[in-house]
Image (cartoon, rainbow over all chains, first blue to last red; front, side):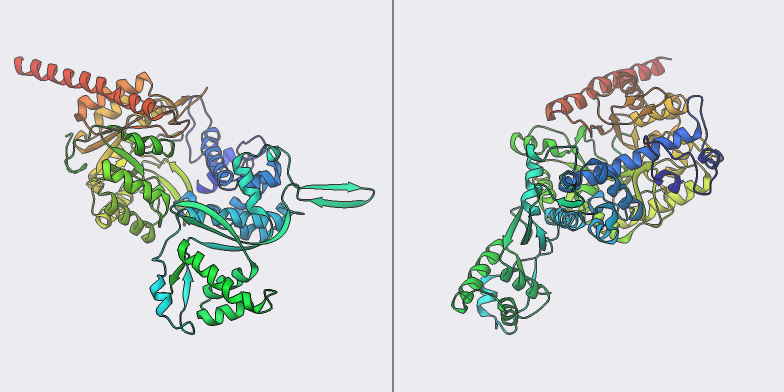
Length: 285
Length: 291
């Protein structure tokens, strides 16, 4: 019965009339489900089959408005259905429904090609927002703890609700514009287009700019934020998250940096002051 | 009957569901509401705004938890992480009882996020009751099991839905969250008399009631929770109140949610039916005394 309810719908949003073994679905269902005066057994099953897919697909759409705008309706719904078929919900809460979507996009690029890289960036950003919304929070590192610690020994971790993303597209601005209801983004058709002229193919990600960015998705006073940071700052956060002591992490972050040495210490000091104020850093458990 | 061990001997009155579109109104206007029902799963999170809002609500209001994913009828054992998170929330809200549905919805850890009807068999009743007991023992709070609306019946069933409900709650020694709208919806879809359903259940186990709106399609009715309560459901609610006594009642409105005032005013309509039920009860008692 679970298999029957969760089987993808056929065109027209109806229950598939042929079972996986070639028999008519009605023949498979009839011994289990009663018909009544108004509905055949398969029609009664169809109510649940449709509700399953409508509920889960709507949930993916709610969590991924940026991806939906970027890919356009047909491609987005095809991706969402393929994802849910491959990765059905393994959690009691719909909150976790899209947790494996970035993985799926990377594993099966055919659903998003030729814009897989952009789609992946968007999906990662949108999942990071869900994590930031209600992810766990630990007691932040105090100024006293930092002031009295030996930087060669001090190890910290990042807040569990925080995600650092190294992206190749300006997805932060794009997703925010989508959420604001930017009229330039409102369209049934995909933002991403492939143009073919004179034997040449040109792929365009539309209003989503190709740009290398490091962005932190986090929350402050229970509101969601995203913050772009310098590449050296990103390397520092990654090194700290990996468990390096503070001094080593700073050294690794600045290796190969174009910042003059004289400025490096000041930059690190500024970043730390901001991160402490935002509560990003916690004592390592 | 109204205040009993399944609702922790409370008489909460009429409540409504706590819904996101109403947060601002509730937190700023602080309207007078007897109680709010929360969907447990929305607050079984680690931190963030959901818990911030919940804590502010808890400062002012009584909250009762209602779950949608315990799946008492699923063969899966209760997930330990799920139970622990639920217990953490139970301690936070101090809910006087906890409800969830008499249904299945997961197989081998794959969730449908729907409330699926069960075949009404003695074996299913036994297993379901066992799971309810296990959950109740872990959570240490009274449990009320809700009847679901359904669109499908099974050849394997050995009894009616109301007989199955009675069997489960007796074996589990738990309460009933009597969803009157679900009884009505199922009665239309499966051609049974909803008054028979209400007459035949163990009334002393009813700890709470639900009312809600539904949508009629050509060949079936769907429990959509997106309309005011229809007259036949209100009449059924009156009958249920006559049988069970005045019981904590909640209006469910989960989709196309109107303003807070509209939802609350709709819920408070229950009072007129409670008055009618109470009068009818008094008249019957008087006649019985005279006779």
